[in-house]
Length: 466
Image (cartoon, rainbow, N blue to C red):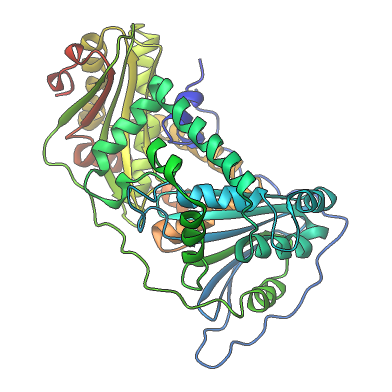
C-alpha cells in the first residue's frame, strides 16, 4: 500500500513518501519548445534609489517600487504561471476573521471583476484557456494564474483585475462560504482530519498560527461581505505583494507590466511579525475521544527553520523514518494499516510527525519509538542513505516539472526561508548530508512529542513513546 494518501492527509507532501529506493534520477528535461513566444523587452534600468534587476542563472529578481518580482525563465515551456503571493496569512487574523482571506480570494477568483460579471469572466478565461485560483496558507495567501504562453499578457491583466478590482458578488460569496463550511465539516467527520486539527491546536496554542487559514465553522459562518472586503483591501499593498512568474516570459516584460499595473498601489502598513521559534520542554498528550475501532495518533515535534543547516538533514531523516516505520510497524508486525513519519514545511519553522492508526497503540507505539532510537544510535549506512536520497530527489524533481510547481517553491523559499535560492540549492545540500548529520538531527529534534489522539485516550500513554 502506498503511503502517499496518508502523507497528503497529514499535510506533509508527496516528497515525503518513501517506496523502495530507485536509482538516482537526473533533473527532468524542459518541455518541448512552444510554437509561440511572448515578445521580449530589455531589462529597464531602475529609478534612482531603487535596485536594478539581478539575474542569477535562469532567475531574475527585481524590485518595482517596493514590490518584489521573481521571474524564472523556462525556455521552450508552453505554459506560464503567474502567482501573486500576499504576505500575512493568519499572522494578522484573529478568531473572528479566520478564514476570511481564503473565502475572499476564492470568491474573487471565481466571481468576476468590476468590468466583467461572473459569466463574462468565465467565458474570457475559457477563451484564453487559462485558470485563476485563490488559496491561503499560514504565512501568506495566493492568487495563481496558469495560461498558455501566447495568452500570458491577457491572463496577467485579468489576474491584476481579480486582485485589485474583484466583483465579489453576494451569490458567489455565499456559494464559496458553503464550500468552505463543507470542507470544515468533512474535516471533522474524518478521523485523520480531526487529528490534524487537534495536533495543530497543540503545536500552535498561544501563537497566531492557532488561527488556521480555512478558519472555523463559527468564523466562516459569521463573516460578512464587509469583513471579506476589508480583509482583501489589507492585502492590496506593495509591501504585501510578491509577484512570481515561471515560463518562457521575458523578465523585462514582467517588470514593465508590474510597474504599469500597480502604479497606484499604496505602500502598505507595517507587516505583522512572524512568531519566533516554537519549542517544547516536555511531552504532552491531548485526546478527542471517539468510539472507533482504530485509534489515530500523531506525535509531533518541533523542527528546524528553513534557513537552518539542520533543514536538509531533517528532510532526509523524515524519509528514512517514514520507510522504516512502515516496514517495522506494518510490514513485519501488521500492527497498523498506516505508519509513517514526515516533516511539515508549511511554516518558517518545520514540524515533524510520527503517525499511526492502530487498534492496539500499546503494541504499535513502542515499535515506532524503537525505530527512532535505532536511527539515533546506529544511524544509517552510506548505501542506504544514497537510496533514500534518490527517493527524495526523484519526488523533488518531479514536483518541479510544472510551472506552477516551480512557482510555489520559489514563493515558499522566499517567504518562509527569506531566500528563493533555498529551493534551488536544496538538492545539492541534500547530497552533502551524511549519516552522522541524520543521526544528529534525530538526537536533537525527535523528542518531547506533542501527542494528539482521536479514539480511546485510555489506550495511549506517553510512556509508550519514551
